[in-house]
Amino acid sequence: MTRHNNVMGNDVERTAEEAIAAIERLTRELLARREGAHLIENDLDRLILEIDLSLRDGARHEKGAELRRQIDELLDDAVQHAAVFRPGQAYCHRCASAACEHSQPPSGRHVFVGYAPTGAPKWADFAQRCLDLRHPEVDRLYDEPPALLALNHTAEELHNGLLRAFDNGTFALLGQVTAGFYAIPARADEGRGVVALSIQAGLSRSRRGRPRVGLNLLARGPGGEGLDRIWERQDDLPWRRPVRWAQTALSTLGPALLKRSRRGTELERRVDRILAGLQRRLERGNRSRSRRTRHAQQRHQSGRRPTRKAIEDARGAPDEAFLHDTRSGVLVVLGDRGRTHFFAAEGKLVSSVRYSPGAIDKKIKQDRWQPATDEQRETLRQWLVDPDRP
Ligand SMILES: [Zn+2]
Image 1 (tube, rainbow, N blue to C red):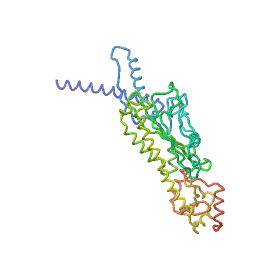
Image 2 (cartoon, rainbow, N blue to C red):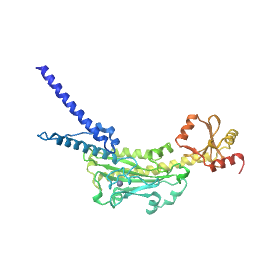
Image 3 (cartoon, helix red, strand yellow):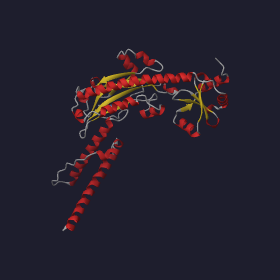
Image 4 (spheres, protein in one colour):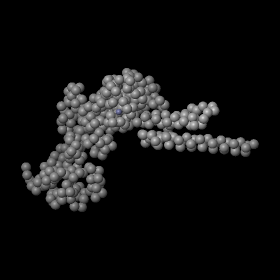
């Protein structure tokens, strides 16, 4: 009797496991065909499929189609939920996506300024934006280094003008801080090395699952590259700590608050306060930073006269040994046996260090050091021929 039960139990278990394996296979196949699959591939274990199938007599292919429809819907929701927070890209109501041609700032100087009536994001040059708003310190954006101004925009302002028919209910902006300009080292062909940010607090609502709130950072480098590449130009992004603070603050907003979200509610007021804190931190952080930069510049400007070794190396160096450090702007001259000399304007020696061949190779491969222009190279040679020139 007991034995009989066990055998039956095993059969039932095996059948159930086979059914699960078949559903898992089906899910992976459906996911593989989907754009944006990479956004949720690692999160499949968090998806919950609630099967809602009638067991009445009926053609099996109809039931199969129904199961497929339910899995498709679950994946659709999950991809869209993930895509709403696609880093560096704004949500476009017109395309119901954060991955369309409208979703990225056209240059490093542009910030998000709201939606067009039919739902596409609108962008504007940050300095022009400050001018339009008659910001009293707009002139300082053209200083060298530029001033950092931060603006706070409410959800109301950002949605102003968006026709309700185009308001895709799955995503809502709760507010935004724009800030600029950050000085980022630029290459010769990139123009002025300045970057402006749009930091958006957004709420994603999927048909299933909890609403989520998070920060999205929209920015491009001076050469139009994405956020991950800006990181390569600068060891520490000046906005990193304030943004992390704001993300942590947002994560304390409870699910009950998110569910009740309507325009002008408690949720938006709480987010406004967090964004005001972010705005203050961005401005304050940059002030202490520019003090540090000034100190560093003073050290640079009092640069020593080149040592005999540095002059010898530089005079004997072939053209290819003259490089330009894209981050700091100084010229780099590679001497013998890893000796590396850094020269500021007027041939002042900033420092001489010894690098391993691997370290030198890495900086060149990462484009941190690029070949000096003919003019940069010849100017430095001139200075080194006659270091006592005024
Ligand atoms: Zn679009």
